Amino acid sequence: MRKTATLTTGLLAAALLVTGCGSDKKDDSPAKASEASPSASASSEAKGSSSGKKGASHRVVFEVGGTGAAQVMWNGNSNHFEQVTLPWTKTETMQLEGAELKVGVTVSVVPGSVKGRDGMLKPAPCTIKVDGKQVADNQDGKSPKPCEYKLKD
Image (cartoon, rainbow, N blue to C red):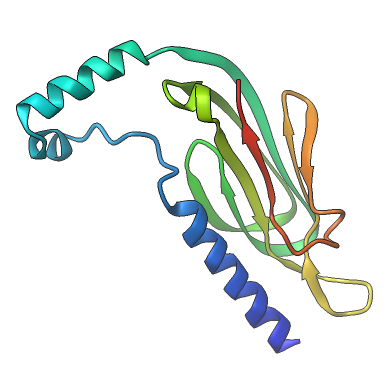
């Protein structure tokens, strides 16, 4: 059982690292703006204004089933990782903009482990719904893969 818990913790940490890379929206902090050259800033501002289109708003629902407590990581408008009480649901409204309209944004939920009927730890069941339609699941916890979906307009 300890080996399964260690494996699950490792998978959660790996998923956190993978989904944490480059998935945040642009950083408009003053420090970043001052590091760029004036011509680079003007160029990026011109690009931003031409690609500043916004898409439709989408209601994204992340769900993790089971009972008890588990670690859950989800990636919607930003990355989150926390201990939750199961069953758990989180709803976010997302609106794609700029380049996201063309390439999309991956939304995901990585459920923690729950005790199965046989007493062994297994991934908790997870689902993702977009605008009321289920778009991802982990087959009631039978798949070790996280629930993920590429949201596009």
